[in-house]
Length: 304
Image (cartoon, rainbow, N blue to C red; front, top):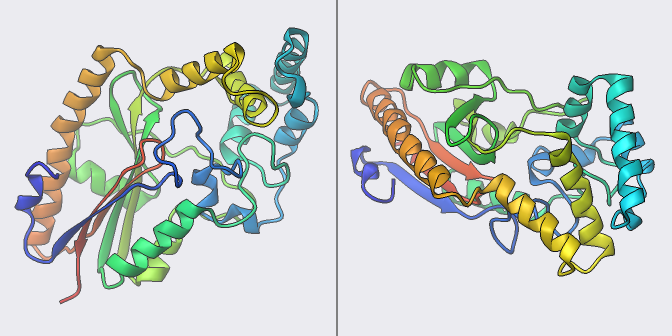
């Protein structure tokens, strides 16, 4: 967009670029903030819910996180995880991990204790830059999910799905499968209320890396040990950090070329669709929010 595609939009369209994940930047090494809050679960304010996750409760409580640097402790942790899968099924365990929990501050997938810096920043940007927007298209850029090197759009609701299909009918799309805690709202649900926009098109756009394995899930638990109980520079934790970085941002030139070429193929289609609908009177805003990569790009159509 910044290299020239923005010129295709009519007067009244604005772009907002915001680095969001946390005060210290995009973080594929530290996915959570200094309070161990997962931003994707903090943004919808799940911390306001009195919600516990029974599967994650067992997982966190039965693992000796302070001593995960010990091989035998890690083996017991893997056994706990395997037993959860045996008891609940792999699909239920994965859903629990996606849903998160709000009771154990040093556990995995924590909602956080309160509104994070990133969530506060999002509110500030909305209040300052898009208070008079008529419609919003918010694309949350991620890495990890989907085929290696390919981009997959994950619509958060039916209207968003229909819109993306209209703009890029032959490009990859995946079903929204993030779990919701009891009484929880979908991500970015408050934006429509705050802006009084007529509609909000929401979706994640994922650059695929590697398939999730038992080792991948274990890696996130091991990162808790490195964060709270060990020197992050010791060889064990340096290895965990390196694996985390590779999972979220593969270093192979092939992956970088694949994702770069793929997004430059599909993004113009979305921008063209956006411009075409503007020309026939459907007024939209586009905000790009990157949780992992840390980028927000917004295209705003203000009420005249």
